[in-house]
Image 1 (tube, rainbow, N blue to C red):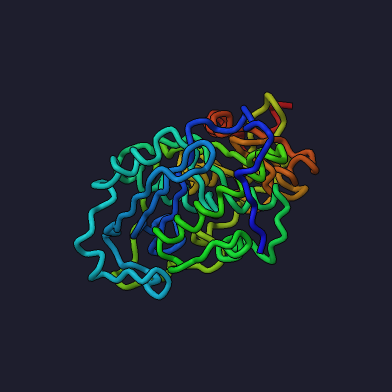
Image 2: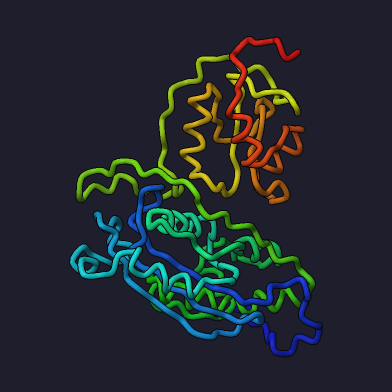
Length: 328
């Protein structure tokens, strides 16, 4: 067991660290896909040094099958009288407002939260997130894996009810504080990423009540079989020239337009949407080119052009037909 006595930290608190505090969040959901819903949520508010200010917990009626009850333990009967997300959105916002969202696998929690806000026609007041998995890697913690229970054991935090949003948030808050202090003491950069609230979102039809096919053990997005791109790959995108039909486009990180909707538009324009980056990739679209994701790292190593979402949506307006050589 490794326990850090962070109260003895002698180094001054880094001025580059967030000053508005943190919102440690955990959500339990009906599954891991884009149309799955939140069934419970918890927030521990921490000050800038990681000390707990207060906590909050709520059940949420998902308006559908509760999904993997064997994981979160919340049945349809339990959730039937719970408030809808739209009913608790204001209180949730008050807990998040101006703070850095902290979660274990923060991309997942933020994606689920952003979609719930989009359905409620609201915007989450969050601009940055911090993933405790990424922070553990930055600190070089000697963990056998990056499960929450392993991180908790490393810091001597007792987990009482795994996959209970309130207890998971408590555990993470207790493990985050010594991690934060260790980072401050060693001058480690916090792995902060931008949160881009959804400005456009489209739902897809749900399966019948009781269907749980959207639950996946290896990812939060459902697999979608798109028709093969009918055009050959014309090569890489060149700056100041239009996109061409057949170009292979990959996406990484948050987008203000729902990712699946953005991908649909790319396919409709005649582009090939790739799930990974290779030497054949024509273009990578990301709003955070400095993030050390596998796609951005590979794109830079291959010399793949990178543009942000705004530039890409502009390029989508005028995609050149396959085989068009008029632009040179």
